[in-house]
Length: 237
Ligand SMILES: NC(=O)c1ccc[n+]([C@@H]2O[C@H](COP(=O)([O-])OP(=O)(O)OC[C@H]3O[C@@H](n4cnc5c(N)ncnc54)[C@H](OP(=O)(O)O)[C@@H]3O)[C@@H](O)[C@H]2O)c1
Image (cartoon, rainbow, N blue to C red; front, side, top):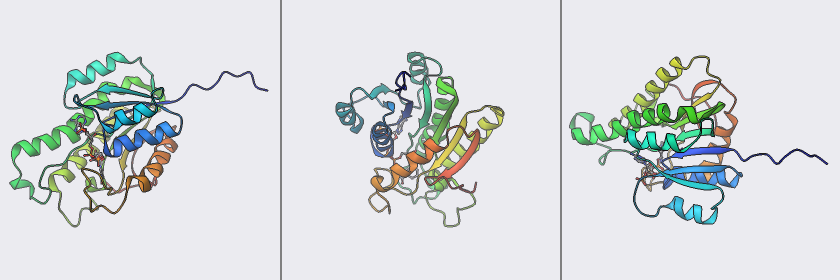
């Protein structure tokens, strides 16, 4: 019989876990016995609150709008350095009319998408990176739409540009972190039925999220930046 103390549960912080893919990722990690710190924007009850009702010992809910540096700083202060095995920044948005060519998109919509998907994500990564263990993983939700190589059909112009910008910013971040043992992941989940993905997307969350979560977990301990799909296959830049 072993006298070893029980293993401490691993911890993931998911930024943007109120609904959609973020909440589903939270549920999958809870199912694997992880402790989940899930963030929501200020407001009422969310799907994450319903999940926390069922798993109160495994879920902590914290407020965070990723476009507000003060809220990122406040979250950083709440947690000790090295508290996280994985930091996963899932939050993202799209402009209202995805079919509109970029030049005809209202400047405030353009700025909101870029502010959230590129600057907000990077501020969250930079602001919370010290929370991640030395051998941990920092992941962000990118998109296959962010691949410049694969963009042969157009559409979703501003959203695509925001995810390509995010990919480029993560490459700059990785270049600054050369030699860091942590794994860095840009995740392209596939087109999935959510508020953002819409009802016409080919895949459900049930079909996709378990695979995505297994892939994320498998990336731990593999230093360097990778742009991968939910199966772990490389997506061309
Ligand atoms: N669904 C797809 O097919 C698909 C494909 C590729 C990539 N993605 C990416 O996957 C991520 C999740 O998308 P989804 O499909 O689950 O969309 P969703 O259902 O619209 O959920 C978006 C999530 O992001 C949060 N969020 C948005 N802006 C935020 C901000 N400023 N601060 C904090 N949280 C914010 C939302 O919080 P609130 O509830 O407060 O609004 C919500 O939790 C996004 O990055 C998206 O670009 C999705």
